[in-house]
Amino acid sequence: MDTGTHFVMGIALGGLSTLDPVISHGTVSSNVVLASVIVGSQIPDIDTILKLKNNAVYIRNHRGITHSIPAVLLWPLLICAVLGPLFPEVNLFHLWMWAQLAVFLHVLVDIFNAYGTQALRPFSTKWLALGTINTFDPFIFAVHVVGIILWINGFNPGITFLNIYVLILFYYIVRFIVQQTIRSAVRQLIPDAEEIIIAPTIRFFIWRIAVKTPDYFYVARGYRRSITILDKFKRTPMPDTPLLEAAKKDKNLSAFLNFSPVYRWQLSKYDDCYEIKFIDLRYRNNGHYPFVAVVQLDLDYNIIGSYTGWVFSEEKLRKKLDFIPNSH
Image 1: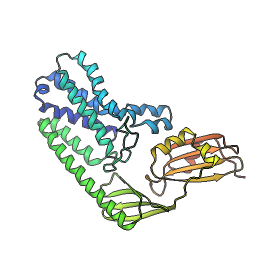
Image 2 (image 1 turned 90 degrees about the horizontal axis):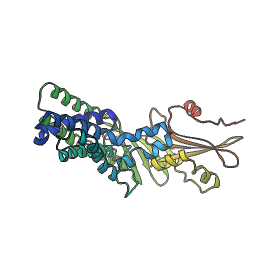
Image 3 (image 1 turned 180 degrees about the horizontal axis):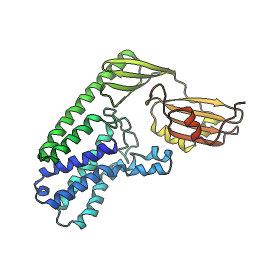
Image 4 (image 1 turned 180 degrees about the vertical axis):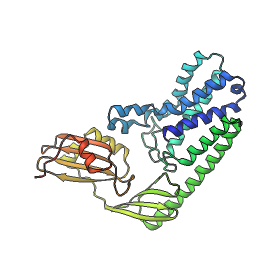
């Protein structure tokens, strides 16, 4: 989920903690636990600072080790190690319990969007992405804000957020059912589909769809039970050529291939270089595919430029690359 939603979820967990008689017994305990769950709801995303290094490092590692099983267990201990000595009157076990719940819920809800997490590390580096809930879901964010407003206006926060989370649970179930309805419709339309990737959008009934068949990639839009094919690309396996093997050594391309499950590629030869472009098919927006990786190699197959990330025009992509090919 986005940072804002994780933040309001932290506040909601602080409200829920008032149902714990050990915590609700004192004002200090309630405030300290509120602080711990807000921090716990944010701390797995500390890897966002990797953006300051470069996109390749960020894409390869975001929602990776900081969302792993060891991290989920260690983050609450770190929070308790900081807050416990500062507030010795707070029950340490209950402080840990609520911080643990906050961290666990952060990772759990991230699994339900299209980006996913590597939550099974160190046992598996596979990305878990159920694609049921959009990274920012207006309904989930709004009901949290409503709950916070009710709390401010004197409503019992524990009961309020308990009811809200029951509502959100049903919302998740409905989203899953709608997603499976879309999946069934895709299988009827494209019976030879090998893999179907369905991603939510900010709009409840609209879904992004990418499909692999033995011979083609399909990019589609789902609306209610209707599927509209937007693009169709011939699948072209990457040959084991010296050029492509050299390109795969690039850190930007390596990060892209590690993250993207469905993409097409294209090779362009210029007078002074080769350029290989990889295009993720999951994020079509207004006819454009913004998530790409590009590797440029000289005529001796040495890497001279590369980029991976989100770009929304060819002009902006060219500005990201250090080398301008000569086509004359």
